[in-house]
View (spheres, rainbow, N blue to C red):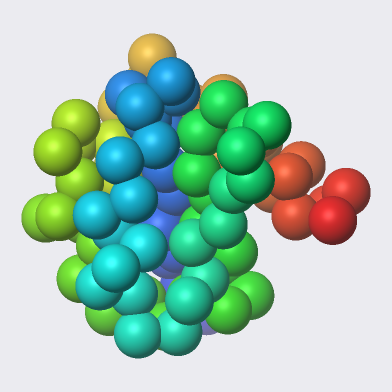
Length: 85
């Protein structure tokens, strides 16, 4: 059985939070408050359309299976954000 991939916002977003991705998301699944260091994609709400990926000016959005090795901790950080919400 093949698993569904999901989108993750990685380290380049930290301190930037441009929000161009938020504007194009048709399901409003990209979240992050003023006190958060970056934005996060809710994997349970994301429809995997990919519209957010090309809008990111710092190339921080990847599917979970394409996150560069140096930013793999972004997957855990994203999951933890929604686990505590």
